[in-house]
Image (cartoon, rainbow over all chains, first blue to last red):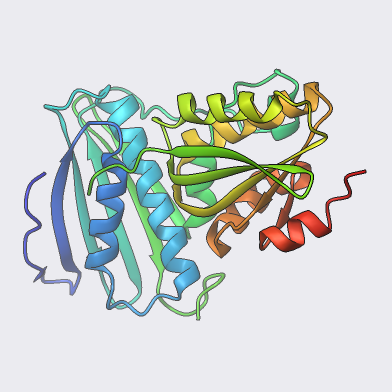
Length: 159
Length: 118
């Protein structure tokens, strides 16, 4: 893992709270999750929103390590945490090519219990339920998933 | 942060079988979870309680493993009951609808007293 860089502020008042990377090895999504939690500890999120955001970060990192970097430890997942007055953002970038790989099928527990869907495929579903917005971009060299929480007090579950 | 591999132990408690789970339910958990569940099933109980009090992390792969246990339980016509989940994972169980198929209680006392076993 690379060491987190100190916070900096750019011209449009978007502050970078942390930048780091984790090797693409099973289990490292939790390390990423805890480092993000540490970077945003002073943001004033309620415990519920913090736990939701942590789960979204873990799942997006897991997806990047597994489907983007195919668990090749030498390929890092890059994580950038930033905030403005109205928005908290975490960008998670892997070195995959082509469209970002998520299970496109909406998980249906009844179908999974009947063997009509695979038991897995919960990652994207969890992410979408845990954040206010999510943006996915990619090119021939990278995929980036951006997880967004609105800080304007209007989002569901905000204090 | 080192991964905390899952540890699972089976015990009998007032006529029900309890799986005590400790650590993380993630990509590494399948072997321990399946082995403990097989042991829990060995006496053909009507109900198996999953104790999540010492689980501090469940990822999407872990959710899939729990779905797998639930599928086995349904085939065997057993009830799976969960207790000791944190508020966050109660929410995850609600969002995924696991709680529609598995009763969720805050603690062991209520899980046992409100799970009718004849």
